[in-house]
View 1 (tube, helix red, strand yellow):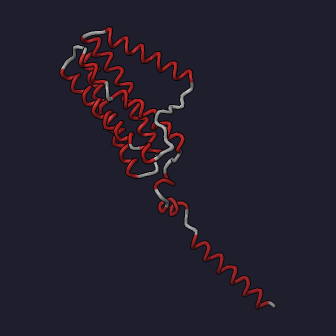
View 2: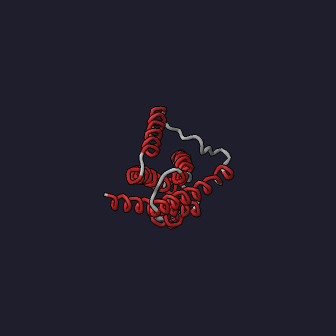
View 3: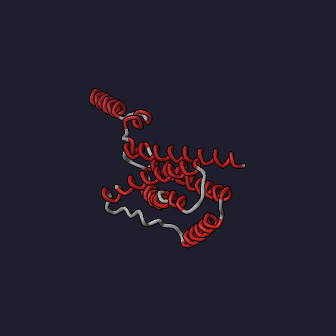
Length: 195
C-alpha cells in the first residue's frame, strides 16, 4: 500500500512537473503571441477613428482649391499642395477598407448631436474667416486651420495604428501619422515666421 502511495505521489509530481514546463512565463507568452494580441485591439475605437480620419482626409485633400481664389505666397502654395497630396493618398488608402471589410461604414462618425452641431458651426466660422480675409491675414488663418487639422489627423492615425490587427496596416498608419506630424511642423514653422 505504501509503495502504491509513493508511486502515486511520484506520478503526480511528474505530471505537475511536465505541466509546469509546458506553461510559459508571461514574458515568453507575450513574445510568442501574435502582434494583434500585444496591441490595444479595440475594433469599435479603430472603426470610429477610421471614420473620423476618413472625414478629415476627404476635407483636407481639397484644401488646395482655396488657392485658386485667394492671393498667396509661393511657400504657402507648396505647403498647402503637399497637405492636399498627403491627405489624398491617405483618403485613397482608406477607400480600400470597406472593400475588405463589408460591415465597415466610414460615413458613420458616431458623434453626439451636440458635437456635430459644434463642428458645423466651427466649419462655417473658418470658411467665413478664410473667404473674408486677404494677404497675410488669409495666410495666417489658413495656417491655423491646417495646424489644427494636421495635429488631429496625426493623432487619429496613431489611434488606428494602435488598434489595428494587421502589421502592414499598422505601418501604413504610422507612416501617415509621421507625414502629418511633419506637415504640422512645417505649418508651425511658417506661422512662427509670420509673427
